[in-house]
Length: 267
Image (cartoon, rainbow, N blue to C red; front, side, top):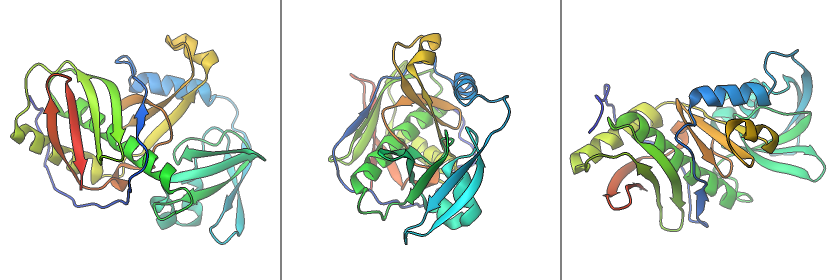
């Protein structure tokens, strides 16, 4: 059932996440892949056109500000944060971005700036936005699980739904295409694969917003946000965290054959 696992090394990681309301991401479609993500990203961000410089203001925790000249539709909050402090950039989970007065949003650290703006870096210690950070964390955990199953299983599976049940401290995915059951040994191997190939590496959660006017060209009737982790791509219903190594240690503990649902429990 499993692909050959490469040099499994267990790495222990921790990340803070407390209980909040559940967040369920919308159904993704099997034809969403990395090539489609690249195409969407190129069209949305207008790659290939003349690079335009924009002024981006980073607002620090103490209220001080620093301006940076960045590339529109190319540079990201993570890129900007690196100019100030690499450790700060690695700790940041989300960016609180303001493009104009009253237009403030929580965005992924790896989603390019669309225009002139100011932004703040939020880490797991931020109390004001704790609920939103937790939702983003658990949403990202379900994306990582889907990526692990997509790469780790020999069967050609498709992921239909992502679940992140924050109050119950678990996340899960609904899958199609699993031809036989997974043993406890298989689940242990998948857990090790997740830690060695994803959690112990700094793989970015990349996102791109596909507006409704372009979504029609790809067979969708409404706008959606795509997320890529490695080569795995899915649709998400909100912001995701910056990198895979911000996710703590977990075990894949259960397979429900009736629903083809696979769950992970974080401890």
